[in-house]
Image 1 (tube, rainbow, N blue to C red):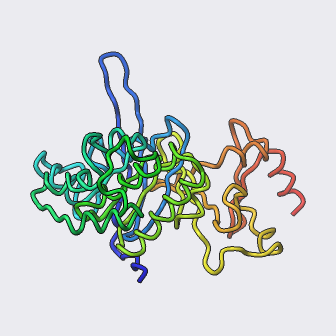
Image 2: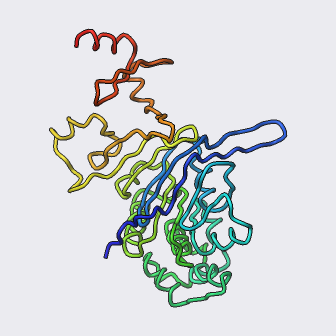
Image 3: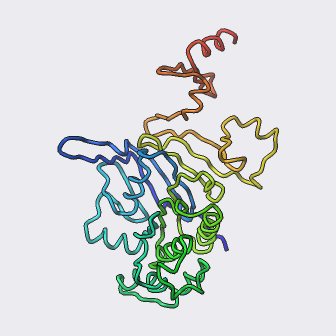
Length: 311
C-alpha cells in the first residue's frame, strides 16, 4: 500500500544561512534558503557545483551546523540540538547514502554484517530485519559477500539497506547513481521508489542526473545558495497532449511532459528567474516589470514599453 504524504512537514527550512569562516576568508554557502519536504515525499535537489546543495544535505544529515535561520526535521530543531541529541538524531531519524561507497561500507565485513553494524552501534541487533532489507534491495543471495566481491551497483544497494537499518524517517542520498551505469542507476531508483511507497520513508536525493526527475514527486533547483525553481509532477497519466503542452510555457523540456515548472518566491518576495529564460528574453542587468491586475510581466525595457503602448 502506498504511504500517504503527511500534513506536518518532514523538513522545514526558512531563511537558512550557512557561513564558512577561516582566518582570511568568509564564504556564504546558503543565503537564506527556504525548503519544505512533506512526510513520505520522494524528491530530488539539483544544482551546479558550489550552489549549496551539498551544504544543505550535510545540515539535514546532522553533519554540519547552520549559521542562522530555521531548520527542522521532524521534531528536531537542527539549530538548537545538543551534542547528545545530535547523536540520537543521526542514529534514529536520518539515514545517509554517500556517492563514494568507501564511506558507506566496511570492506572486511559481509553485506549482512554491514547492515547489522548500525544496529549493533545502536544496541538493537535485528538480524531478521537486516536480512529483510537485503532481500528488499535484491541481494538476498549476496548476504555473505564482502565489498571486493560486489559490483558497484550491488555496493550501492547494500548502502541503501544500511541507511534503513535503524528505521529512519528520512533518507538522504548524495549522488546515489553517480558511480554506476545507466541501467544500474535505473534499478537503484526503482528500489528507492518502491521502498518510499512501501515503508513511507521520506527520501531526498541530491544529484546532477536529470533523469532522476521521472522517479520523484518533485525536483528543486538550488542556485547561489537559494531555492530558485521547482518542477512538480503533474496529476493524471503525466503524459499530456500537444495542445495542452503548447499552452504551458513554464514546462521545461529537460523533464519531458511529466513535470510542471515553477519559480520559487522566498519569504521577502524575491525570486530567481532561470538563466535560460533571461537569455531568451535578452534581459541583462536591469529589467522592467508591468502588472495587469493578474500577471506580472518581465522583460527588457523596450519590449515592456512597446507592449504597454500597444494596449
